[in-house]
Structure formats: structure tokens, C-alpha cells
Amino acid sequence: MKIPREPKTTPLIGVVVGSDSDLPVMKSGLEILERWEVPFEVRILSAHRTPSVAADYAKNAKERGLKVIIAAAGMAAHLPGVLAAYTTLPVIGVPIASGQLGGMDALYAIVQMPPGIPVASVGLNAGKNAALLAVEILGLTDPLWQEQLKAYREEQAKGVLDKDQRLRESGWKEP
Image (cartoon, rainbow, N blue to C red; front, side, top):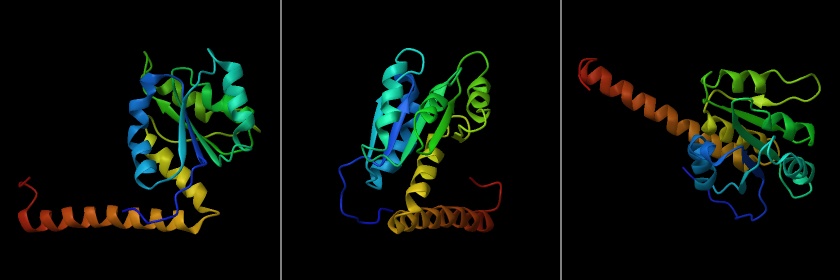
């Protein structure tokens, strides 16, 4: 469900992926932001291959109007931490399941930040939860985002209750 609001053009959420191969993981979250008309931007920046560009992005994010940064990366997953080191905005890390360790290295890299440079983390490949968390953060200062999240959760609850009703009517052996 989308709650009508006046469109804004200045992005409020910055979504940064370390590689174009990370974009599919973020798709479900980006679709929610788009459907709810949350102003956002998407960039491909690397903590290792474009470190100065990534640092500049984070340093200037607040002045450009961003309120939250979502950073998705796999393997060493330094991107969320590097961005967090250069901004005081909340950074949400999305560990990407990849490589020989299946994403555990990315998860540990994001959740084991040194004291003083926090990064929030969602689960492996949880781009949708990252987007929802970012909207929750926006909701701290804009009640309309809280209304949007409430409506979304009510839709989720209805879906579960509909499935429960079908189960009670048809039994567990019926699809």
C-alpha cells in the first residue's frame, strides 16, 4: 500500500553497492522505496577500487540531503565501514552472500566494527530489510513514513491470517 505524499526530488536514502553484481540483492528493497516514493539514489562505489570517491560520497552525503546510507557488499565487505568512517549519518550494512565463505566473512566484517564507528547490519542478502530499516529511521522525523510502515505491516499480518484461514479450512495436506 502506498500512502500519497508530495513528491520530493532530493534523495533521502543513499544506496551504495560495491559492485553491479550486488544490485540483485538490493532489488526487493529498491522496489519498496520506489513504490512508496521514498527519494533515493543508487551508486556503485568500492572501498578498495574507488576509496577516495567512496569517502567523498560519505563526507558530502548529509549536505546533499541524505538521511540514511545503505551499503551492500560481499566478501571483505569494507564498504559500509568505510562510509561510516566519513559520515555521522546512520549506515546500514547489507552483507552479500558470495565467495568461498558464503557471506559469513561479509557478515562478520559488518557486525564487528571497531568501537566508535557503528554500522547497523541486517541479515545476509537482506536488502528488503535494509530498506525497511532506513524508512523506520526516516519515520523518526516524518510521521508519514511511520504510517507507511504501519500499513505495510498490516498488509503482512493480513497475508498471514489469510493463509491461516485457508489452512484451517483445507487442512495441512492441501496446498
